[in-house]
Length: 98
Image 1 (tube, rainbow, N blue to C red):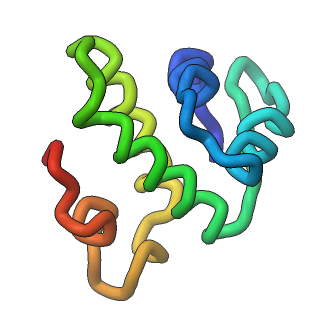
Image 2: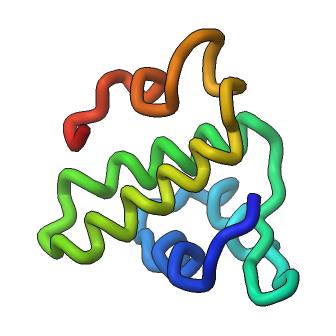
Image 3: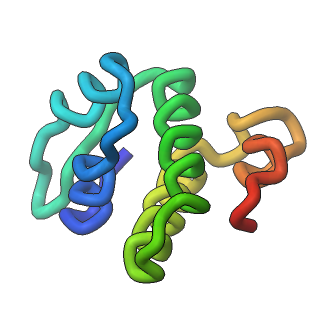
């Protein structure tokens, strides 16, 4: 998945990444002004879950918007592979922030 520098910075600032998610974020590479984060579908699902968990606890409206945009980017990358017939929001167990 390709992220803008701002979306990537949003990921880097998450304090609750587990070791697998950290490896996914920190082994990224720069490609033509974007940052490419590569992993399996399970890796991206895990990362999406961490991002979604951050949203309701974030006090800053700007940071919440950045987190939502990053979650949406992961969703766009995954497309319909989240779960058959379900959107990313539905897949993420009716997240509290939608």
